[in-house]
Length: 269
Image 1 (cartoon, rainbow, N blue to C red):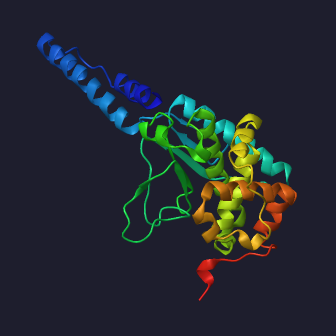
Image 2 (image 1 turned 120 degrees about the vertical axis):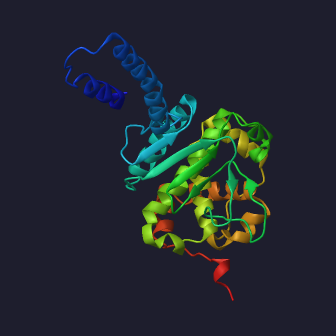
């Protein structure tokens, strides 16, 4: 809008000079009338289709509909305050992009699919190099087929998954150049723990009720890719219970400081 006003102002500043003949003036008016639609098309190409909001935080960009903006900003505020209360502050650089379909490509995120495999639809993922979260919109027909922890998809569950992905972004950026030293299963365990910790209590209770026999890990060595791959939903519950048993945010601090006993199966011969 500001750019359009500037162009219009400059047009009006041209010297008027002698008044042209009526026919010439009419052609000039027609030319100007034809120019306005061209300017509108130019502005449409420059201005993004979706609104962009920064949630009042520098370095944050959200691309989506108004409801998605609200959920993203609320989740960001909640999780950043949670980490800050634990003396884990970060100047987060992040774009959150909501789309109708999100596919995990090879090398796209922290858990890429195998070589030669077809891209798979996912709820969302954090792209490390781009510092970007791509989330499946809650209005996507595909999202209604998702049943994390065997619960029906709704806006609250969708927002908790966004919290999981934001946790990934914060943990990666807190670790900085050390992010590769934290095994992939640990990245997932910590993101799940924060996700469940920050859920509305009634949702957390419903999820825990689905897995009454799932216990905390007996050893931090059980946080590995094999255990995670067998049952990601059960792994998430055990990760959360391990997190709570070991002091919550203090456990997070020890983990990102690489002070806990860990195993990365990718490093085994």
